[in-house]
Length: 116
Image (cartoon, rainbow, N blue to C red):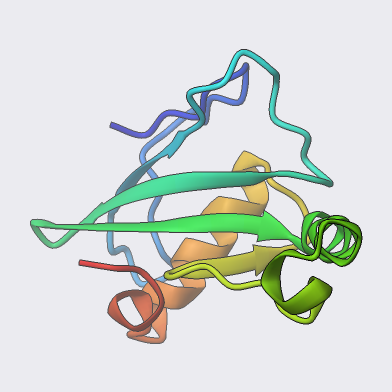
């Protein structure tokens, strides 16, 4: 199941430092390629027979959305940005997503930040 669209494909099934395995994929149904520094994508994670879903984005994407909302008047004139089950990362790439998920799993926080 581990698959990133738009050319970002991991080489192996991810494992945490303690050997816990998980699978994930990035869901990006658009024709445009993922911009690692400025995008918003959905992820699906399988861990211990359960499926989790959430979103991954970058600070730059959020900043640009807030500026857009300020001009459009949406979200109280750009006062806020929100998304359920959202994780903010420095880059949207396999290495960063894998490292993030490994850490959340090791700390027992996967169900806390992704929807089940």
